[in-house]
Amino acid sequence: MAEPARAKPKPTPETQHFWDGTQAGELRLQRCDACANVYFPPRPFCPSCASRKVSVFKASGKGKLYSYVINHRPAAPGLTPPYAIAVVELAEGPRMMTSIVGLPATPEALELDMPLQVRFEPRGDVSLPVFGPEENR
Ligand SMILES: [Zn+2]
Image (cartoon, rainbow, N blue to C red; front, side, top):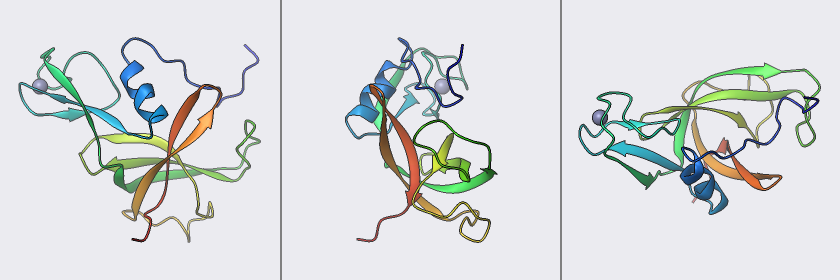
């Protein structure tokens, strides 16, 4: 396996709705119909109560910076180091590992709790959700 670390993810039956969403420019999460828990990553049952009655919905795409590391290693094509790998806490609650775009990868530019907004970067035949500064309206 000579693939770079950021090889494109492969959709599986459990994650297909998610990748269909990113392709359509939507961040899709799942919500449990039994206990209303919202969760990520995708799975066919609620991680809180194990119910299989779960629904997919379109998330707001908003979140805040929960934690990050700045990566200085040579990266896969399309990623020029240094770049930031972050955990974003989504407005709906779940946390998502992602990369930060549109901001310098420096501790000065990356403030914990700063508001972020999803955007989508094409990678092969999938679109990856990444996060950048909230757009001004
Ligand atoms: Zn549940």
